[in-house]
Length: 285
Image (cartoon, rainbow, N blue to C red):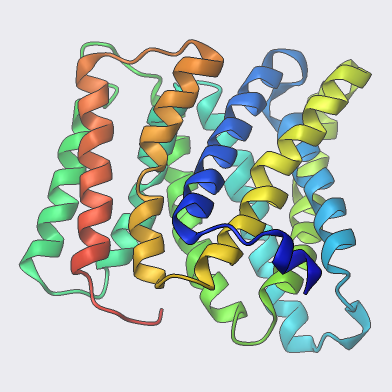
């Protein structure tokens, strides 16, 4: 109860701070790539996040049923794969474009069960946005990076579906805390195999701790606080701002300046994502 009182932040600022925290964390992660690589960065972020969240939430593992273990294991493995693949994507393409492409997964999920013409128009709008930054465009983005970002988007959509299911059998804090353990078990072997841990220094480890806080512990707490005070649909609309914040963080932290066409692509996906959230049916996936 005390923790909740400490975070009496109004819902709108809480969501915006959560978005900024996640994207600033992604920028820090990309800054670590030259030293330890994306796999070791993902391992550091997820492993330290798992420790932080486990200590903060203290889930009782002995009380979990077989159904809960099965649900949280799958949830955690998808969470780990999503983060690892996304980091591999933004190593090859700008952060803002990686986030933009990743958003296609949740967007398609939002209109999957809809038969409204308007919802298909949102998908078309997003497709136009993607076409503007496709590898066959003049700038020629890295094809592997684009495909990895889209794959991360598909995993994000799967993560959303699994999150909805696991929320019916476990408390949110427990699910994320235990799920992060399985995410760690999946990702850490890739980090070890990449050899990046051999380059760790106290300074880089400190950056990893900041990354874990910014990418997981802080935004998760802020998002839970916001969701308890605002409708889920409003929350989803606000989350559509992530590509824009990613573009800003890319400029500030990474000096990644996009072309006018690429900014237009980001804008189209943001509009499509927000529009799909507004017009799609209120359904439990």
